[in-house]
Amino acid sequence: MNDEAKHQVLLIDDELIALTNLTTVLEREGYRVTACKTGEEGVAALQSTAFDLVLTDLRMPGIDGMDVLRHIRETMPEVPVIMITGHATLDSAVDAMKAGAYHYIAKPFRLAEVREVVRGALELRRIKRENQELKLRVEHLSNQTTIITQDLGMQRLLETARQIASTDTSVVIHGESGTGKELLARFIHQNSLRSKGPFVAFNCGALHEEIAASELFGHEKGAFTGANATKIGLFEAAEGGTLFLDEVAEMPLLMQVKLLRVLQERELMRVGSVHPIPVDVRVIAASNRDLKAAVADGQMRNDLYFRLNVMTLTLPPLRERRDDIPLLAYYLLRKFSAMMDRDVQEISTEGMRRLVEYDYPGNVRELSNFIERGVALAQGRTLDIEHLPQSLGALTVRVFKPEMAATPTTLEEQETEHILAVLKMADGNRTQAAKMLGIDRVSLWRKLKKLGIDTK
Image (cartoon, rainbow, N blue to C red; front, side):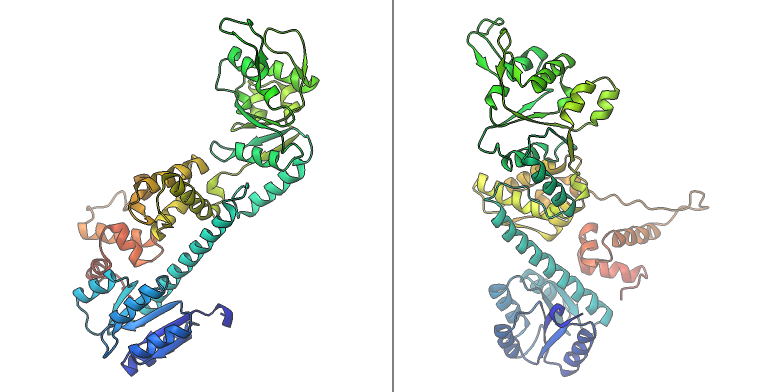
């Protein structure tokens, strides 16, 4: 660990032996330690140095650990605090946690436990710092017309989209439902020479053939029952701009013939008219289906496929670009908080973890729904796990045992296997495992000791 990467740790303890031992252990881990013998020295050190973590004894003469904790919560709430004490009582632990301590360690402590808790606290600090950076990036992006991403694959895709935007090349955008196909089409339009013209979107599978023809190509007065006036279609409405045809593979075959003619001839005839009207429109098509397969199945005309499919852009599903989830989540949090006039500013660490781990069959649209729901339910400034759908927090643990066991496993054996499985799912993080089990960390610690599981 180089000097720039070293974490700054403040250690406060009036017991010289404990102070020396902890300093040695933490420095061996690569941390830069500032050791103070009194609370007064510790508070003074906080004024001059930006610490990443504070470990403080709870009971000290003068300024004690609770005073230090309150001072940090008021002045630098992002810094985690670990309380250390030789007076191990449940009440003092509860008081410290209620006041905002990250964790509580009782003397005599195990060095392995100290290392683990320190790593967990610094990981929390890192996550909070990254979340703050995400919020700043969202602030910067929120007033721009762009696709929010930090994924390298998506960035390459956007660069390709920029390159083809300046041409009138026909484009097919392929991607699962909810991946943002219309958003990418708008991106191409906004980066094209047609950006000052209109962008018009149409869902090809939403309407009956006759109504769809009227919507796309327009109709003359009296062309059919109810046509009381002449109406221009979406092609004419998009003149000089871009027409986005979503789910193009769902378009009826007869409509595909009419669409192909417009694309080839650059002119259309309104329903009920015999006079062609020239049109200057760029067409971008999209589908969540494989268009080659649609052609093979006879659901899409081969000639229309080749006319549209000059360039294909494939949007990856959200589960394949998980690094974008926190950035998108904070963007959506800001968006829906403003829409609902709410002051929801943060997403809890556990809430974000569940969001990142979910597979999103509905992609960005589903993430948007989750955040909108969370903002609506949140009572304070933080969107927490209880504000998200229960499906994100569902936990299923299977207890595996030999199929031909001579005797059934005991409850104690099942509990042991269950706890070990949850610990594995939590990557060994006992605080997280306790939350997943629905118990506090102290109770988990006792169970581990009772079951003979190594607590070091």
